[in-house]
Length: 69
Image (tube, rainbow, N blue to C red; front, top):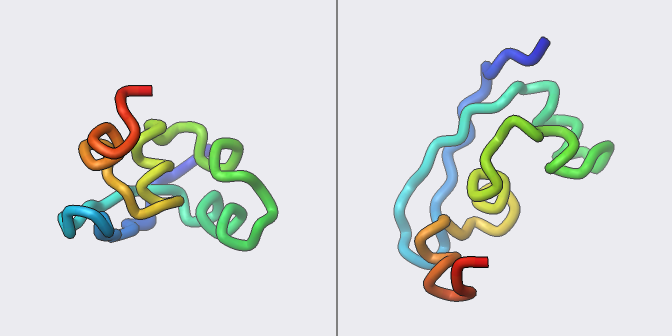
């Protein structure tokens, strides 16, 4: 059972807005250590939340930079 018990605060490197993503600490550590890919460790997050953790790019900036898909 996943318990979202860790708040990750990150800033978009493009627009400098700050975001919080709440994850299960065990899942986060598995991803951060390289044990699992982010989509496997935290499949319950929205795609844009995972991208924010990976690239520090928010969904709005991602769409401006790369389009909708």
